[in-house]
Image (cartoon, rainbow, N blue to C red; front, side, top):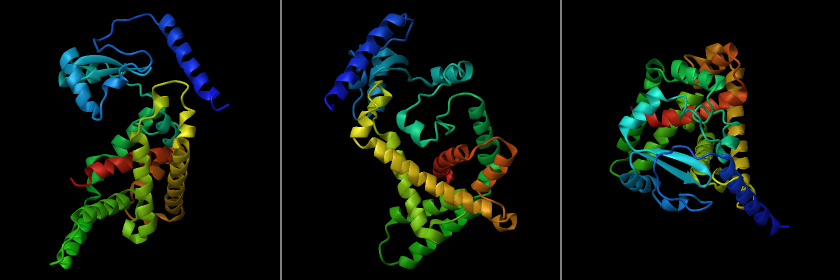
Length: 299
């Protein structure tokens, strides 16, 4: 039975390749390197794909077409052409691939960065732009950043003349800033909880970054059961779910007087009352916000 699974998958791949070639009419595509059967141009992406793509673009131009397995890819290597696409052809390029891990972890592609273009994407984008990522909202976290920077300065000063692991200290400061702005609690207030969430989030990032064959070859999702990816995804999704359920529940239980100016969860809960936002969609937005705060908290 185990030997039959690869055979069935290979047969599925060959059938898909033949039917796809017969059904699809060749269109006018940008130039690109010659591809191999089935794997396409995957073999031409080395350890550093961005360098490989840059080198290929020097031969094939600023608009280059590749096949990564069965996934067609347009590579843009010119700022001018990228600007033209985003300004004049934004809708045509608004689709996003339904990658295996993203679909399962991001609440059925509910993260705004992965959601398909449509009513939900527009609403989620509106919430991010008008409610959560405004200059006023970012500035409202200034006191958090100032307090945490003050703490790390005091820590370094107090440690003198002993050496200090500055990388670990800055990372701890980063955790506290993000946790306080998003969830209303510093990791120091519940170190086990803060550390746990960082471990969960890093595992999420690791899963997203890994090569998944089912993203490029239809019929190979069974590989994720064999190599343990499905188990890791299920555990990570369960851990994320548990964390979000806890912090959202705590915010719902407290009174408005307890919340003060409010953190990001408070804002999302207020928005949820005014819209059709589900709890899963709220959690997906929190995942995106976690990344966003990580990028801007040093500003």
